[in-house]
Length: 327
Ligand code: MLT
Image 1 (cartoon, rainbow, N blue to C red):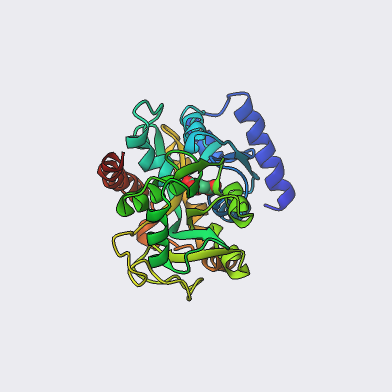
Image 2 (tube, protein in one colour):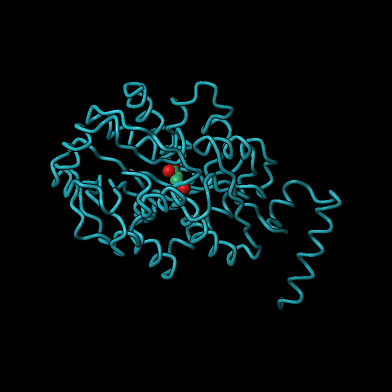
């Protein structure tokens, strides 16, 4: 069938679907017949937004429908995630969540209006994102050892930027600060996109952020990177030492970003979306863009919806005692 025939067919299906004539099964088989909304729980330009746009840009080609990014900010990403949990489970409203919205927020918000496991269908993992300890360019410490001494000595004066309670930038620096035994002033933003602008501008002192948000600034010399909190150095930043090399092996932190759909989204809709994610992660241009920003591209075994469901369960179990101890 040529493009004209296909567009007539999908228009016809859309009309029938719109009139409710198609069964749920038939609608799922025809999915998607219109554009899809992808909620991003943080401001444009931050790590979650950048990863979502790179991957969904390719997914849209596979699915034959546009995927419209909607940045919904507030409360460390839980405002958007609550909204997504209550959206129609028809596959036309999705969310790019992460270790914060779909794990760390559970112990941090006792009255959280959703549960990552009960209120969402895991669709697929997009990228692992190692955490970096970053500082403004003229922050006095020259290396991590000096950073630790300086922050301890100036605890009441230094400030740490983050994207709201429960965000990756918040919980990873909570872990760092608890290891150091310090309580700096927290400066919240609607995402680490705007927070990075403040760090580059020297308005905040330091931040724990996902690597994809920092590589351009580090390579451009507009901020400092003291260390990456993973066992190995990251290929996109060969000169940035690991926390172990820099003298703080206890601080290990890697986040991840993934796509979720509201609970009850039909299995074959989830399967179609997952297949489009997998195709995007195998596309050389998508891979190039994710890797040059320091992302860890999931191995095949980690790309299934079930694998994401297991990751969410394990991450909630991992961060709950850590954050309860911190708080
Ligand atoms: C965070 O959790 O810190 C967010 O991912 C930041 C962002 O994406 O803007």
